[in-house]
Length: 617
Image 1 (tube, rainbow, N blue to C red):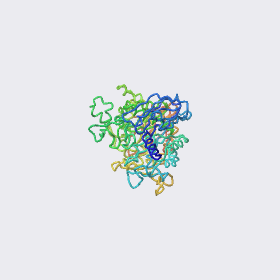
Image 2 (image 1 turned 60 degrees about the vertical axis):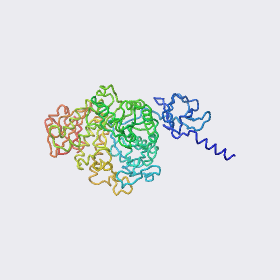
Image 3 (image 1 turned 90 degrees about the vertical axis):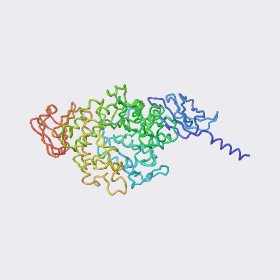
Image 4 (image 1 turned 45 degrees about the vertical axis):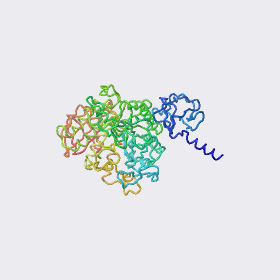
């Protein structure tokens, strides 16, 4: 009889609700917005009573159509203890509980530094950079195992590998590190890129731990550098635990005429502001899935937006981040995203967020920047501080490699900057030659170092925030037509078995040294040049495929000359007299030569070269 009672007791306990997940797992006191919504997940958990210990008041309880979820809202300002219990009760009996911790924020956390035009951003795909911990290359609980022989497979790069090579990044002159997503991506294939995340609160174990991620950020911060998180709001991985057991059908966008709810986006995100758009096209652009394994999140659902908002703030606070880059920004519900980014910047007024809006018109890009006059037509404000200058990205390789004509050659660069009046904040824009989704710049130019020098000179001296993609600084190439893996190759020296180590000067080839040394020279010069960070621009229409512009403020002026021709060109300096007024000489920081800029004289520049002249009176 005693055995029977014991069996019945055990059976009864297992029928009660068990808390399987709580998100966020913990939070902080003293946030500007004291309201916190806690997701509590467990089998049929909403059919039980939920209470909080220590007289903590529940402001709101929200249940969804899925009984496995409860969303509990509290006011953290009303909680006087460092922790309390979330109790699940069957009638009057507590059947499960979770101790919820409210931590103390670090001093001045709300005013943390974030990336600005003073910074240079180094973009890394962690799986392909350096393997600092071989023990985590494959994990039993994660599907995709490490195999460097598979181009689209996991190669073993990790956070420890990046930590081990911070000296290299710092010496190059970069001041901020942007990692492609490192949260858990437990999809069956191609999980190395990280954009199909399956747990938003957990670093992928093949990269390391949450603690490793925070350590990387802190190590960077100690050097006056910072970590930028790549945040994905538009889609999650199909194997995300929340996707596998949806809180509600409208947590994601689903199509009745699709394959299990899936319909691919038409990718025409100009539908966001096209006054002539057909509604079916707009719906498929914004609600369609980015890929069959990437369900499209519904940011018009307040629970979804709040989940994403709290998750972003959690990472900023926990990992002491210096900024965020948001993937596929125009694919999201723009109203929901405005709420998301405003909540973040309300909590952290100095925090910078840059959105990827892969569009080709400056007007289309400008629409997405905070306080855009263009967006006012729609009575809309994105509140997004920074945008990526994709029109400039598209123009650079063409301008450098093609012959001059009315609308070709360096005039493309000039024309791009004639649109600067559209942007609310031209200094807060990413300027770049390539990234992890594009053809390698050095592939387009067939590895021509002179073309690289021209491109790097440009992004390092114009308005905005220069971003360089790992490996470009040693001449890495990659043909995107052969697949994304071709533009995401392993950095030589990141693995113990590598025959070459390009992280060291002695390990670089002569050609790699040329790329690297030029990059380091320009970047380290730029660090302390306020005139480049926030100065004004005066540029002159290119002649004979030579582009000349000045960056200036009240204290100094820099003259940049770019010759995209293969032949030497001679320029009459009197044409630039309005910018050279008061200056007679200068020093070219590239060649270290003194230069006369007397307007009665001329200046000569070799083919496929640039000059960055610090002017002197």
